[in-house]
Image (cartoon, rainbow over all chains, first blue to last red; front, side, top):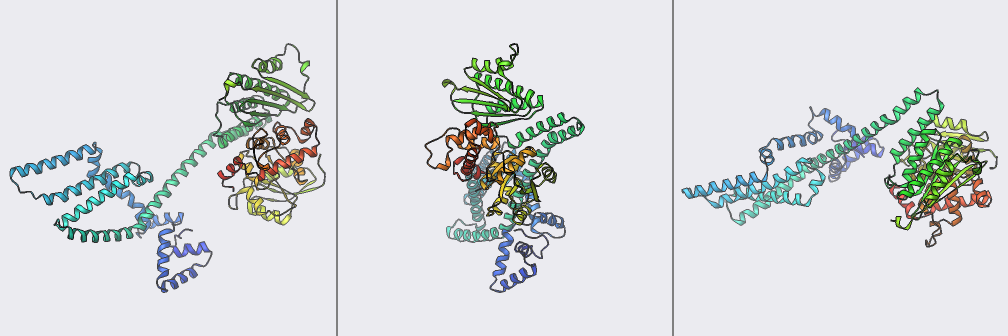
Length: 416
Length: 217
């Protein structure tokens, strides 16, 4: 539920009507009736006014109207900026930015020295009237120190304001300032007077806080909305940039090459793979591991030969020199399949004690023993390589297709 | 390999180009009763036409943002209608969400017209359709070893089911799996259906974690 931008007072009734799907006249009548019933409607209205955020589009409207109608939206929007500006331009900036604490301590010491010198000379200094001034100064310094720290992260940065230390510091500073001012104003160090004035001022402060609370809340909400808006905006920009660099470029290329079926398929596959990788990249998988390596090899072959290579992977295992040999053998098998038989499906199952790779195609098949002796591809690069590294390779070829199965046991010392 | 009885379907996908392409690719004995592009349209079309099979895109606009899984939930209770999920995405959470919502199978959109017609027929017959990738997910979620120390029958795969899943992940068709394992195609189908049931009902923490991460529970 949001408050409407075109209501009579604060858009509460209009918003409520929209939320409940009732005519707003009815809602207003009910609200008026409730107000007559002991002021309940008034309370409800006030509560909703404070708690319900204003409609997104409405904020802008209020901003536009700010010139003629100083509404709460205006205060919230202009408040922080003006406040920050006054903070930045204050003497406090000069003091704090110039090595901060040392300067303050130095000034305090100078002041104390001047007072002592004055007394030495013979001036009659009333110490009891000095004390409140010192207390006020101390409190102000405490608060300013905190503000200076948080200002960098934007005055009401959540992390800063939530830090217990920061809150304690601000609180202590405020208490010191209040007490000091009171002692100064009341002019007497007597406790009875002090006590009653503390109570009175606390009551006033509570009243002020109550009045300002809705504005504070709105101010906070605006800041939050702005922050999340900025985050969304930067995310959108990143996605747009990526789509532009990849997808749009590829689409342009595809339009250029529309006549070449092979090229178009290859481009589309490569782009699909890249986009998938970007969208669904598995953060849990180490890019240096077996599965990632085999996927990279498959992508390479897909680009080079233009036939689809689908990789399904289960589990993962770290690389070693022997695993490297396995990846090379798998590459050879995938290349053979892609070159001679079209679409290839690769299944990798990697566990703690064994890595298996299956490369399957649906080509016409071949008879391993018929391969001429001088053709080293299958015999050396696949079977021989696996055997030299303590693994095994079997090739099953039928008229329905060929499957190369590579298997490699993990040596005990390689296990983690 | 399937019964050749005519099958009526509803195609649910938010891309009109894809819907028309799919329509052109499907076998002649498959009748498209209706098309839908959003969750609301889909539910209305399914309840109104009561098709044998719904070809359902995982990602759909409308509704409460639940996509395909929401359609299955909202039009649930139709005994005669079965769902075959269809997606460009092969991300685990997408697949698992629709399967756990009740889809009888999952295929990617790059699949050919003949393959998809075959898959539709299979789902219409009450069988499950597993793509190699879905089989890969199952193996990832349930583990590749037949574990005996898990109490709940639903939370582990039998060694036969593991073998079947592994062969499907390797790209074998049901017929080839049957030949490889010296069993009938019907037996393969019953194993796959059993795995599907486990995938839908299991409380294995890998599956529930997926679901919980995506607020699917």
